Length: 176
Image (cartoon, rainbow, N blue to C red; front, side):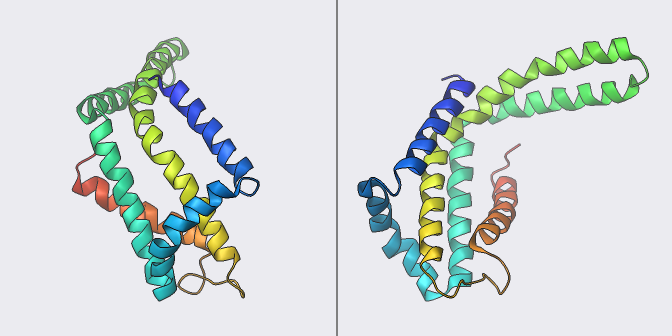
């Protein structure tokens, strides 16, 4: 499936989830039924380390999906060619006509790269959105508001930990 079509479809489903989360109880109730005894139990045991573990598991899931749904050899080649092209563009920064030609060549890589990198989105975006909605409900119910490791909101904690874990897992799985 074309990368743009996947992105459009995921955006539509995401909007549907956001729109129906509170108005169709089956959506949020099902997610809570699954995540409360699993992720909720981890957070209930220790909110700090629970968030670290959940972020790690989600990052591992995303990395594994990326590894097996993307043609990583082709992606590496495209990135290598783009890097060479960028180096050439630096050499010709004072020659607008040559630079324009190289920029046109660079734009030819965009659809190829997008088609390769959008494939995992079809498998990971919806579960991640459901997790985010669940996180929002879980942490909204805690009074007074809790800070992860004393200063992170749940969103920033997840973001920071998932970036760290993604870097680690991408190196482990040798992803481009």
